[in-house]
Amino acid sequence: MEVQTITFDRIDLRLLGALQEHGRISNLELAETIKLSPAQTLRRHRRLEELGVIRRYEARLDPKSLGFGVVAFIQVTMERGHIRDLAKFKELVAKLAQIQECYSVTGDIDYVLKVVARDLKALSDFLLDTLMRIPGVSRVQSIVCLDEIKGTTAMPLEA
Image (cartoon, rainbow, N blue to C red; front, side, top):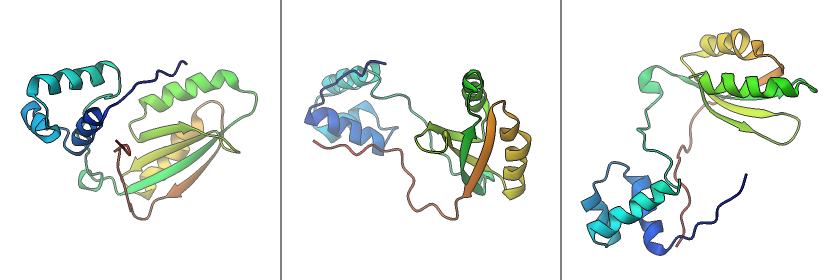
């Protein structure tokens, strides 16, 4: 995969910072915030979208308000020599709504997953009935989150 180098000026960074903080801001409000004309603001905004810097817009929902009282980080170890199972694992993980994030990592484990569940029983059922049944999964270890101290998707932008 080729990494594309994109140059950002102070205005781009202010625009991105404003969007991170207020994703539903109007173009006029955004222009006022970054001190640029609405037309130039819109042009820059669209350019950042087209470059893939802005992936998408979404609402961040409160898990507890929706009945998801458990957040867990699951460490997954795959069976050695089961390269053919990795694609199937990734495909299934992408389809499972309980899995919010999945990272391939270094070290003794292969993946770290962020999972939400309604309660500990639901988490246990998900681990035993779903995750452990995925071909190639040899071991899972769960770390249950007691309290969220910080949760953000904002990038540390610097001018």
